[in-house]
Image 1 (tube, rainbow, N blue to C red):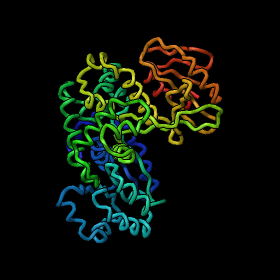
Image 2 (cartoon, helix red, strand yellow):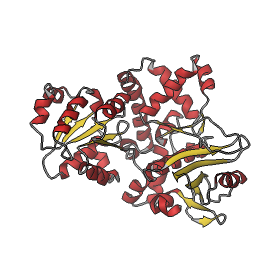
Image 3 (cartoon, rainbow, N blue to C red):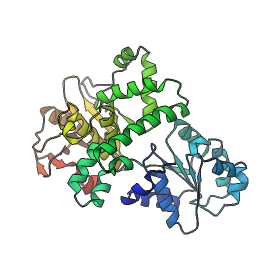
Image 4 (cartoon, rainbow, N blue to C red):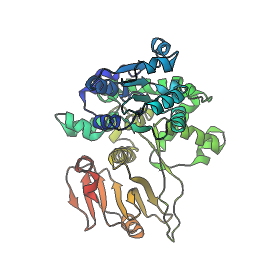
Length: 403
């Protein structure tokens, strides 16, 4: 249970709240997944408090709540007309067949709200047993529009979000130092507690070293052989490490765009630490001054912007980057269909220019609209097809308006 974020997250309205409520009115079961400490428990309690009928909350990490489910069919059957919230559901995968049977007997919407920390077991079990009965929703750390809407000084809040990341306890800490202490504790807890629970038998020290090395490769191409040499293991093993952090929603693997072109395209994916505050903790960057003097500055802003854009683009969108061996490149290609694409470059500058590589890449792919996301405050054209736009403006305007 995310006990410490119960009060913090209430200070900022989450945009996912309405989506969860709507899903509960349509589906018998809704799975709210996300890495630990994003505020899933808090949000579930807020939804339960506003639900038309009393809801039941069970934390499957508490022995007292687990005891209630000693005979799950009897207990849950007695609450057939109640919204039942099951927190840390991945700890009881044996419940999924029970839930399936109960839903099949009564497909009333809004029966179960399942909270999970995105362990692979959760995803596998639920997809096998609850197909067609359940919808997945992901609660991320705080998003830029969420904190900008709730803060008196959005620009200052945006800078704080970029430095500290979006985990509620980290973002809302009294100082940058307190925020860093929380992030160090989060990393330690994940390595010492969550990794073993996920069935991973490698030492937490090795996984931490891998994670730190990955932070130094943030926004770069994945080089399995290089990582394997550093750890004296096989390439499949370091890929296993990478997949572990990806499954936990802590790392993003951005795939290259596959296009039928007469050019040699880069085939490796790019890796990003999803929460930018964790990136800075892994690199031991304590404050804004240190960040601005660090070589990771540009890559940090790129990863921050790309994660925010992906989380708030239309749900039917696909994401990739484009790079050729001769240097043509686009940081992010967002595709709504094979013929409806937009090109996004990210530049930490207030006075961007359009690179020749971006122009050529857009021409190669037949993309007619492009945007250079900047750290500035103004929106202005860079060419007839490409405009410069601040990150917050892009997110607030809505993606459809940029096509």
